[in-house]
Length: 308
Length: 252
Image 1 (cartoon, rainbow over the protein chains, first blue to last red):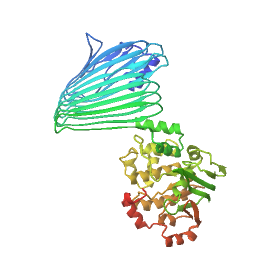
Image 2: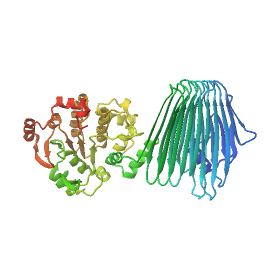
Image 3: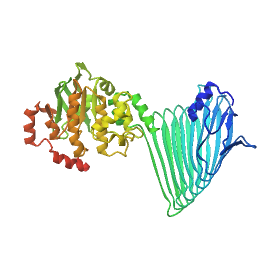
Image 4: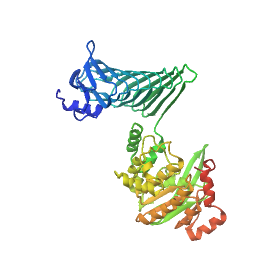
């Protein structure tokens, strides 16, 4: 295990809630190098040969185990593309925690593009948590472009919690998923942008099998001069159900573009979307102010609750 | 405790100034339960908002504990000890009932303590404390939570704007107990209730009738109430029940 410095430790805490070395399987990547790795009897982590990245193989029937694969970057000017593949065996039930923290105090851009591919076998169940965080006061940007591909076999279940609350200057997030019969995908995205940040999030979820279902919900706050685009498309190719929702608070000179899309190619596909963008309601602020909060404190409570 | 001196409030509608409140002077003494009543559109809710600082008067002054608070904002007045229960409570996505009660109390109340406030308004605390104050709550539930937040504030002056609106009969009876209990337990505090309900008028120390933006009558309950009942300004409990059951036919 490589020794981590104070900043690296802080980033780890932000993106993976890790104070110490996690239990179970893990791989910690720090400034493009492995800072520690552990496989378990049921979960094997190996390095890819041709490109940078990991292969994580989870045996069928593995229950209540976790995999942590956090990434921290503290060197200014570092750019990397990482390919991580997860093979989740039939009926396994696991938690996978990824996340990337960049601290950039220099004047060169730091960029991490993580391409994650998930292959869920029949009946597999995954809870995936991905947190992004940026810090450092250098002029170099902190850039994260996550690409996620999910392939779900029959009756598999995946819950994805994607969180990016602070400090990432530029993000293009692309998520695609293909679901077989009875598979279910739940996405909960929480995003806050500030300063001059840009965040684009694109989802294409294809429901190919009978009774496949998807629920893609984004809650976001755009402050200052930041810009967000939420583009979520659900395609129904069978008797299936899909729901997508974008609920946003806009503040200052922030801008948000919501593009919900539905494509039904089967008469029994049931798809719907909701999108709402608006500023914080004045009456919400006033209510909290009558409880003794200042306007700024009230705003903070409302946003914290909204992004909970 | 609270003194309104020649208070006026005017709004511009279609280029014309309309006076909602005209030269209202009132004193709310300590340890009193005052009910403001009168016909709809008479300016009662506006008066409550002027006291809480939600609206700014166009004339006159407001004193609280001897201090001129006319220029003070909502937060400052809240911190000085003025509490306000909205007629139509506000919903929040993501904020839990527990969070709201803790904000109201101004401290990290234990869950058990927070639950006491919910129980006081007739809610099964365990079922509600973790709920979000969002669209999943009914109007009646929301209203009771609103009252619980005011209880948690333990304020010197608690202002309730039509607390009975949208509440069912069972909790309405509890509501009367809540007000009685508040009066007994909060030292040197006063309660100001905007209401049409005869049972609420019945527990008042003093009644103020506001009509067309002015104080029509004011005095001890014994003096004012008989005239109101005869003039049908107050709503009977039964009628209140019908109102509560028919949201469309009600101010709520």
